[in-house]
Length: 188
Image (tube, rainbow, N blue to C red; front, side):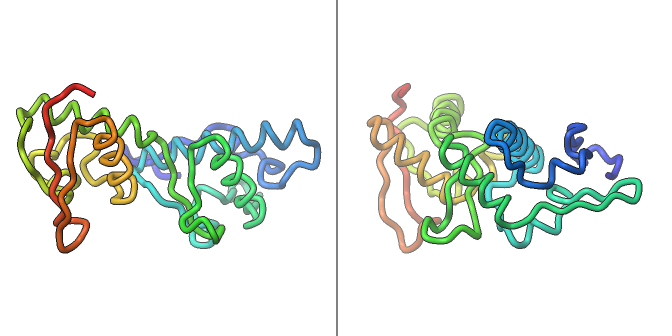
């Protein structure tokens, strides 16, 4: 691991070789899946990542142990089982649901993103203003807020929550980025 300020500090279990093999005992497997879930969520939060391409990520430091001559690698079917556990717990979603090769990782739930966005609207005086989806995720006024750079799928889920709460309205655009969002300045 690198010692830069941006490097992720893995918990000690990450260096335990049996951790990379799906455990046959149900109780042990449940603990193993929970630990992997925590690592995946922490890793994604640390790096502000929102998606996990399973095949591609199997070669990353997240799912590999290469320490003191010991090499272990998580297998695809084990990673799929871990993500299935996360889907069941609401911290991940297969994308698309018909395939198990890519997942959205919810290190913060869409409801929480919706609250952060609504608080931003209230704090920055954007009540009764219309902004584009692009401006919310990438605009200057959102810079420095945790949702800046948010994955578009998660952002749209958060905005849909605000619409259902009656604190926002979405206007169609030529693309998702061009869609307008009017915030009513209501604390939902």
